[in-house]
Length: 274
Ligand code: KMH
Ligand code: ZN
Image 1 (cartoon, helix red, strand yellow):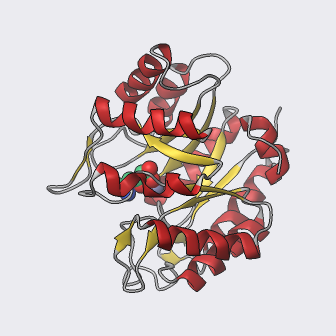
Image 2 (cartoon, rainbow, N blue to C red; image 1 turned 135 degrees about the vertical axis):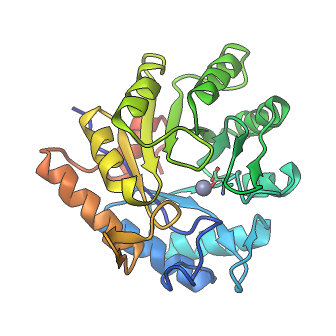
């Protein structure tokens, strides 16, 4: 069995310091949380950035500052900026971090409700546009799929030449508007992937550890972190992203599996070596 890639989604766009004071906003805090996750075993940092007051932003200059800070602390980690940003942002706003030529970036593969009146909009043309920009720049897309229909969309776009094989997916489970975080639904999603593709799993709130553990058992990879979950156990806030990574590392090792280093992750995902 291959080694397990750990992605840490350290900041997100929706979680706040009011919910958990360790959620990072400043450049220094982003660096601190990335370093804690990296030292615990994460080889990919999925990155959203904020203004100092916590407002989500896709500002290129802010991304650059944060990426420099992360690189200083985590010399070989893979930085995967979000092109999803926050609900309500324009496509042009969201695309800014691609100008920094990251190795990877997220490619959200469909529109879904996001709780209350929020809708996370990704039309077919938006996805095509984002995918084209990633292809032009040699950036590996991680296809974010919040529902089975988004896998179908990604596969259609692959056939039309917008996304290259082998494809890498993130199964996003338990968003209020997406597919549920259940073993049945994850099995359905994984069974829908083409041969030769790889996948990671993230799940919201209390489902984070259960569904990432199931992913390991199913031959997938894992994403943990504050973006998806703020608690280390029932009612107990996690003190850092590192604590969440530590927990999934213990589970992976108890299952007799090994955690991939950044170099091994690059090789598995077909990224150029550093
Ligand atoms: N914040 C969500 C609206 C991504 O990073 O690409 C979108 C998101 C997905 O988090
Ligand atoms: Zn994200």
